[in-house]
Image (cartoon, rainbow, N blue to C red; front, side, top):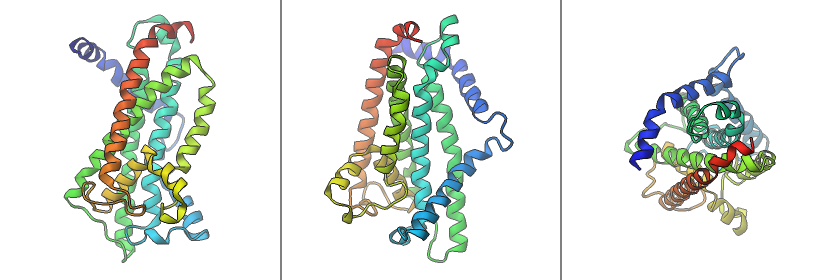
Length: 281
């Protein structure tokens, strides 16, 4: 373990530079640059809130906790982070094949750096969530933003999300080197994950047992539900899911356990196959 820590510290400067490079390349030739980190999830959430909340009248049941736009925005931010982290990490080895062929660099730095810079952008986008909560506190008399000690628990779903992104990124980046069709398959899987994560609809008991089972065992939904509970001022340790009736603590433990397991599997797969990457890129 000491050997790996020393190796990581030796290349930490390169990791920082890869993170900076990723952020710069993501918004190069864009007039608004990093502002899109704030605008894109906000505009997407407003469109979804209009379609599902106004046109289809699906958002009434969430008004007792917070406006439907905030409900959607919280889910959209978490799903967007997981989607962008995994999609870019999956291609990271092939995207850096020129450097891999010329100089020795620990290969895990490439998927790790892509996850880190996308996660940093996700943390910045949480500013939009805070701004929208303040906005509705001022304009909507039925909603009041709650900030208490439970707010500090937001660290738990955010940490779980990061660990899940790292684990999934390592697994996908390894498999994609040998099975490139995974890039197209993963887009389909992400669409399924989105529809099973309650991003733009609320989970209630009228959905049926099959739908409940799928959503309940979706770790990304567990993270989204944890985040929504925290921003409503509730505790993850004593609260049931605001809509489906699941225990938030059980969902947190379940999602965190799967995330840690994905990291263990990802590290094992990456370490076992990394010497063969050069033969397939």
